[in-house]
Image (tube, rainbow, N blue to C red):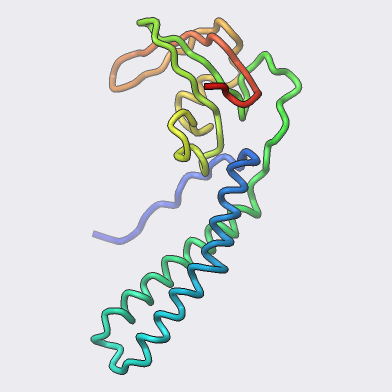
Length: 169
């Protein structure tokens, strides 16, 4: 069994202004606060002597590798993503950043916002633009029917509303 992992699929390079701010703050926190703290702890643990049996030193070095990996990822990702902070010219169709309200076959209403893959896990109603549901919604208009294959069954939704303003609870 090899350790080879196929490369990750390229995700959409879009993000909302708020999502960009969250990633940027995380990068600054890691670089300016977390990494220096962990580096100090590793230095103190290294000063205690034998590093081969020093759990604090070994754990600290592992933490530094993880922090550095995340810093590299965030730095690269922030350089390659595009902040979308304006609604599209045609607000009658679903595009990135839209709040959509759907009605399922049972009459239950669901509200989602189409956001970038780097921010969909921040709020429960955020839906990654790369997800099957979001791909089915793109360029749809109000009253269009959306069909989705989920767990070997077809689910149908009707698009009730499209909004590009902040959602009101």
